[in-house]
Length: 264
Image (cartoon, one colour):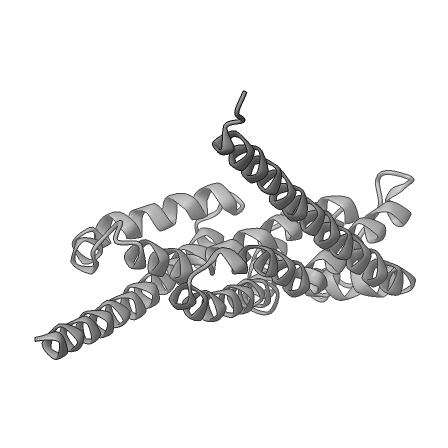
């Protein structure tokens, strides 16, 4: 009996495919371990300063509280666990560029050269925009919002916020503004992928403005002032994304036109 040579080729390709899959899984495991180790190292480095970190985050509210008033801890465990929790999130924010780099290093080998040249600026921009959103919330939003909330409190009510409730509030705002500031990246990617044209976005601008206020209403406390402080920057960032996306598409069309003319 003669053996089918194709069977051996199939078996060999199947084994090599398994080896390739195993290699990817091993690489993914290694990169996840690096992320965990980096997060753990930063967390252990910051845990000694947990109370100082919380004091820094709480300063926009503490600075506008009435005299002889301070924040309180309703839960007996809050003085320990609340700064502990904040330190973990602070470590996550500090490690974010390294964590995203590990994700990028894992998927980069599967990208084409032109995709890599575009992905690197988008990666850097997305990280910077996320930090910019958090900075905007801390340095612009918090001071205005907390001053307003304290000023409208009834005279017979002592404003003494709970430290755990405050942390939940600021984390929600940080994430909301961080992701909201990613709008230019999202708009650019949709235009680059050909899912939507610049002219279509410009025609739908009124709906986008309404959508920004709806999203702000869902992500921020139920007051129009805070919602406007998120919705207006979201709209402006949308316009930034449309501008750069349109410029990129025009440049791409011009380059393709030059290539076609050279071929002729």
